[in-house]
Amino acid sequence: MKLELTPPEGAAGDRVAIDVRARYGDQVAELPLSVGLSSEPERGLELKPELPALRGTASSTFSFKVDVTNDGDESLFNLVANVPHGFQTRFKRGYGSEEITGLPIEAGATETVTLEVTPPRSTPAGRYPVAMEVSGGGASAAAELTVEITGQPDITLTGPQERLSGDAVAGKESSFPFTLANTGSAAAREIALSASPPSGWKVEFDPERIDQIAPDGTSQVNVKITPSERAIAGDYMVSLRANGDPVSESAQFRVTVEASTAWGMAGIGVIAAAAVVLGMAVMRYGRR
Image (cartoon, rainbow, N blue to C red):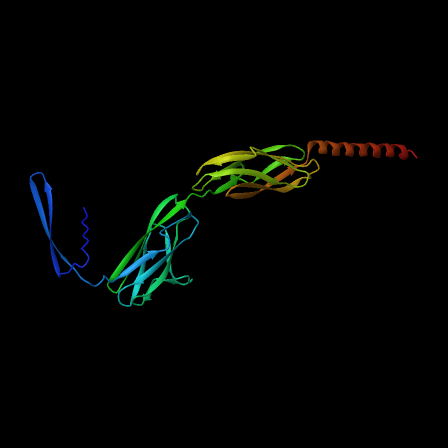
């Protein structure tokens, strides 16, 4: 229960007696009070934030501008911020860049203090209280502020068995199971998949587009890669990309190409034909 008293205009007297009564059933409880009146306004500190609540993602730095007015005597005032565990804070004077822990304020003067609050990147979406306290010269004041964290997606793209390499045959399609994971605190939406393969290669995705991946969720993507029929044996890099709103991720997938069986058979045929021609030449000219 809270009792608020507003004296009438022009009220005077060092002490004013007030009797507070509470009735419950047939019983009455009384509490005598004595209130002192003064013609002098109360002197002390006043904190006035420019914006008491700020909104952003867990990767944001929240900057509160707070005007501190000293209605008392000149003094050096200490600055303290109470925030949730893991949050980082620092104070700056006005719009300066140097970090401070206190500042002098002349009597009747006002100083602007900037309180910067940086949450951990893993902070879940929600509202978090921030209390700014200023004290010194026998006076103290506090301002209740709020940080609202909105969710933020964060995606990763990994290959089969968490590897970014695989084998393929020239001219033949090979399939590789990839995983898209959302490790952020909000859903990743409208994710489109694309690739930049070597010249003459073909890359397809199944599916080509993912509508949504929930926080801590995954989605499987089958990547079909067909090297050029003329690709010689060796290692090649295929750049894979996943672009969504508002996230982007890329990966370099190394493909080790083996020569096509058809080309191998053709090579054997060429060698065999050359051997036949050479044999016939030996037989023809060897008799002379």
